[in-house]
Image (cartoon, rainbow, N blue to C red):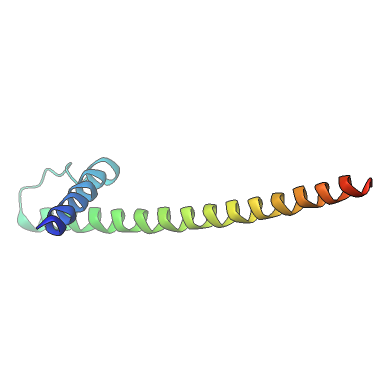
Length: 86
């Protein structure tokens, strides 16, 4: 029961984000076909933006890890040189 409630929360957040980012709630159509086309394109745009956001976060995290690794190496090198009086 709790798992189902948790899934519902995730779905609600997804729809709320789609409403704000891709205009999921801004349709004014008079036919089912128009509504279907709008919803399909809005969901496709939302999926594309989600994938792009996930990829950019992964790249940023990877670069951050590399930077922290480099700075740790640099700081240990600086400590080593300082200990040796270099």
